[in-house]
Each structure stands twice: as C-alpha cells, then as structure tokens.
Image (cartoon, rainbow, N blue to C red; front, side):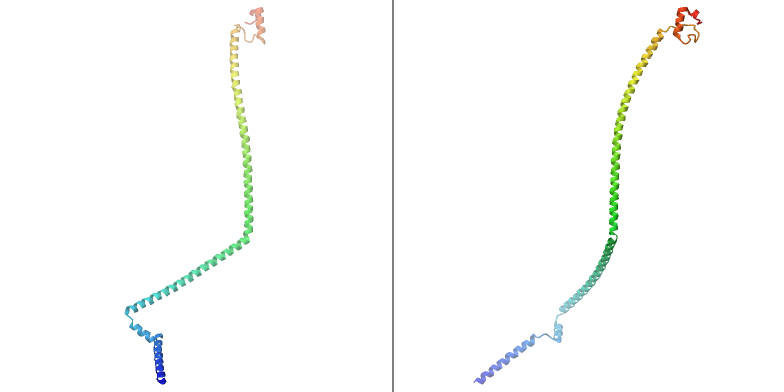
Length: 211
C-alpha cells in the first residue's frame, strides 16, 4: 500500500518537472534561424516599415556625424580666433607695459601745456578787456570834451558874429561922421591925419599946401 502511494507521488513530480522544463525552453531567446523564420512570416508592410526606419536611423546617424564634424570645425575656428585674440591682447599688454609710461608722460605734458595756453589766453583776454574799458572811458571823456569844445566854438562864433555886427555898426557910424576934404594930394597928410586936419582948420588949406 505504501509502495503504490510512493510510486504515484514520484510520477506526479516527474510530470511537473517535465512541464517546468518545457516552459523554460519556451521562454529562452529565439535562435537566428527562429528569428529569420519569424521575419519570413511577417507581412510585407512590416518589412517596408522596418526598412524605412533603418534608412531614417542611418540618415540620423549621418546627420549627427556631420553635425559633430561641423561643431568640431567651428570649435577649432573659435579656438584659433581666441588664440589670435589672446596673442594680440598679450602684444597690446606688452606694448602698454613698455610705452605706457611714455604715453602717460606725454599726456601729462600735453595737459600741462594746454592748461598754460588756456591761462595765457585768459590773461590776455583780461588785459584786452581792461584796455577796452580804458578806451571806453577815454572815448567817453573825448566825447564829453568834444561836446564842450563844440559848445565853446558855437559860443565863440556867436560872439564873433556879434562883434562883427558891432564893427559894422561902428564903421557905418564912422563913415557918417567923417569929414571929407577934396582936392588934396595923396600923402599930403604925412604921418598924422589929425595934425594935418588941425593945421588946415587953423591956417586954411591954401596956406598948408594941399592943392
């Protein structure tokens, strides 16, 4: 009785072991022949899609390769440009270190000379302004003097006109009061006309000798 039960248990265990082995073999990866057989069994559109995907993958890989090459070239160009810039900056720094002091001294000298020129020009402008003020004062004095002189000249001309009028009146009166003696020889009166007239009045013209 016990032997029969043990045989049944053993048979059942062997059966389960066989099923597990079959499942394990079914779960193992497919071999190359199995994959090829699987491909042969695929529809045509699946193969076409796979071919298109492979072509796109190849194009992407080629584009990536080209992009990497371009990036490498651009990077090389940038590096070369930066190298040139660094060299130029180094040369400029070296030049500034060598000639910077001379340039600074030159700028300081130029600044000092410019300041001196400005100071000189400012002093000249102040002097010219002072001269202009003096000239303006003198011009004002001359104008005032000229006005005074003109007033004096006008007063003198008026006085001269009055004197001329008086002289004319005196000459007119003198002519009216003159005594004219006709028939006398020229120069007979001698050095004194009044003395000759006195003699004529006292002795007569015939006795004096005027005819």
